[in-house]
Length: 99
Image 1 (cartoon, rainbow, N blue to C red):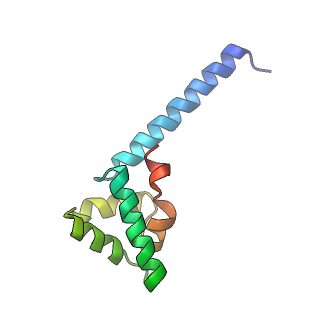
Image 2: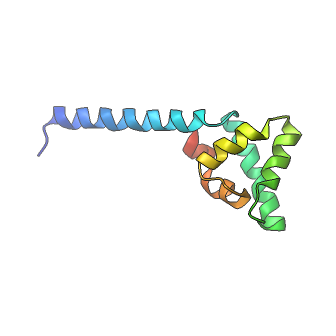
């Protein structure tokens, strides 16, 4: 059984790893948490209404309407698992990326 000091050290390491992971994930996107939440909400509503055609057309539409360059945003979303609109909704939760 690990000593209290060893358990505390492991917890610190785990917390530091989680923090670094969150920071790295959020750094992939050129938008903040509120903008990502708005993007996901917009895309989700359109996917529910129209379905997913396995493109990011709704995400691109949102970015265009917000004046955000799609190239950088799209690349960040893909690195987070958002290869198409339905995957943006499923894999790019603001709560998971910006904790």
